[in-house]
Length: 405
Image 1 (cartoon, one colour):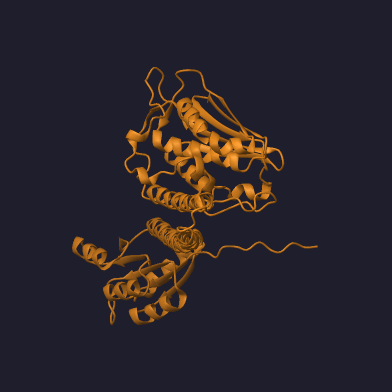
Image 2 (cartoon, helix red, strand yellow; image 1 turned 120 degrees about the vertical axis):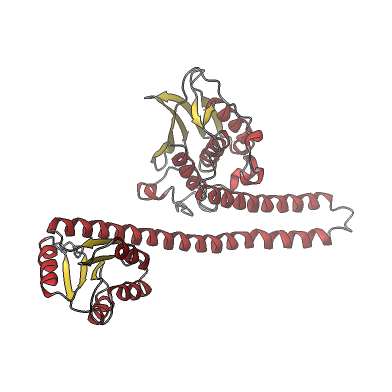
């Protein structure tokens, strides 16, 4: 059985507009030998028609032409496609003409006569510029699509608990005159609080992602005592682990082993990893958080004895909104933002993260962070004083239940 032929990327296309036949022929020969697809036109009018039809990657245009001038060609090409890359060639090269061409929107300027190498170099630079512009545009479109999808997603996620809270409050209003309904009222109050906490956690995760997008999350680069942060997070997460009989264990690094980072960011990172390890564990399971120096860095590992993650899902774990669909994970609260936040924090702090997991055998997340110079006092886990905006950060315990892979 024969395999399908591999798709080849077409060579970049170039349009040359010049009223000099010898120049058109010379440009075609030079660029043909370099593997480009080349079309030439003898005046501005036919050149503009060719550009509209061919949608080239680069346009080479002579400034001095009868009829439509080179400057007008530049203006009309850019009006149709602002990302077009235009190289001007002219035999009347002066500083003034170069400045005039650049003001009109030309990318570069090549005076006649020029050598084949000079033309090839300027074309290569122009095509690279075109590639970067298109890539930037693609990424911006992706970000805009993600923002719109995020707004839709969050609106939907908020609508469900808000509707539930509204319903619960209606029930509470009906119980106001019930002298024997104290226990029922407490139950409905608890339901309201839980739903509101889910909304707060979702909003805080949203704000955290926005802060990271704005590159303003990690405010500091200071030596941090990661052992202290881990101990504090585990203590606060015990209320989440104890109902399921899950043991929380720590293996601290030797005293004096510090990482370099932002204490608030690191606390959020540890909270997300630990709360995930608890949430996706099995009843009676175990979560172990270890800190150790490795090859001049500090490694944080969070291991659980839970569901594990199938291989096909592991490449997507750190994508925003991604959630593993597998038996046992259904119904777990969360928006699929926890690991996306972790990944961005790690990247911003100059570290890296990896995961190893087998279904039914649990998962281990390993984070490598830059080590702080030895002999420098560290910042402990009392991070509240470092918070620039307390509402930005998720907190553990009940709100940890809203975080997910």
